[in-house]
Image 1 (cartoon, rainbow, N blue to C red):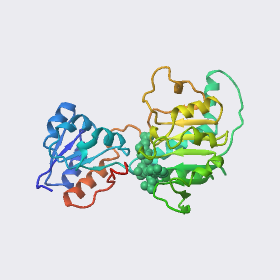
Image 2 (cartoon, rainbow, N blue to C red):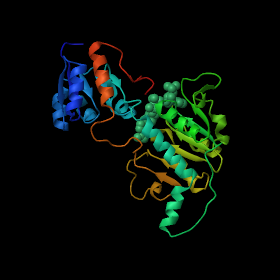
Image 3 (spheres, rainbow, N blue to C red):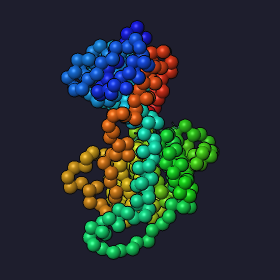
Image 4 (cartoon, rainbow, N blue to C red):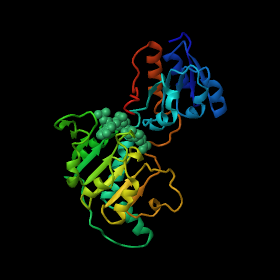
Length: 320
Ligand SMILES: NC(=O)c1ccc[n+]([C@@H]2O[C@H](COP(=O)([O-])OP(=O)(O)OC[C@H]3O[C@@H](n4cnc5c(N)ncnc54)[C@H](OP(=O)(O)O)[C@@H]3O)[C@@H](O)[C@H]2O)c1
């Protein structure tokens, strides 16, 4: 680590945050870019970049880049579009920063679907008084794909409503193990459960292995009154397959916070399918300063300057 690394912030730091960064790395030179042109100019001398804004647009100008700290959890787009330009560049993500609100959002979607709020709102707009048969989460069999901070947060909340919780992760080998609120299966072990799963929640990163992990075949195995929610990455679900299943009345409903195309094009079936509840990628809401990732950025900069292991380092070969 050179004595005076240049640290490029792709956002305007508050007074307090800039002070915390200076304290974390007293020898560093902090520069901030508020627009793409400035980012490109400053990128040339930057050893460290904090924040995603303008990053991909200015990456070509990088000459000394060693570490990039993302403000997002998912780094699939960075890896895909950064390509070989990120060789030799360490990448850290914002894992853990948004767990609570993303898990809350997933539960909000699950509850809305289970209690028919999406349909009730449509009925209200149509001045239609239509009691529908609804179920309770208590005792329901639920499966959470992804056992990171988001998946665990969802499991904790489902368990609090009395649901039975199964989960799946990549690194689990052999027999399922009880871990906190869930019985956790390996990357293939969850498949035989599908005919029993009444609530399926996806909280997965987008990697080559998770691409369309839940497709038409998997959806077809769910009970007809199941609900499906995705707050992870759109690539992990076959969206057209889901829509086809919903149109055939194959599921009670689905909730999507992430879509293949955001926003969806005019006329897309996702706008009008009554069993589909959409939210515009807000599980992690857009925030004003102070931003929730500020403490992580400062702590990781301190670690970088001290030569200590960084938090949330992405394993590029795994893709998350
Ligand atoms: N909608 C939003 O606004 C929003 C906000 C934040 C995050 N997200 C998305 O939510 C995803 C999850 O976030 P997180 O913080 O929980 O991520 P994380 O800590 O990286 O956890 C990812 C989990 O997925 C598991 N996994 C990976 N590949 C798998 C496979 N092939 N089969 C089964 N499980 C697999 C991992 O298994 P191991 O534990 O074995 O590694 C891990 O448990 C992120 O990738 C992010 O893109 C969305």
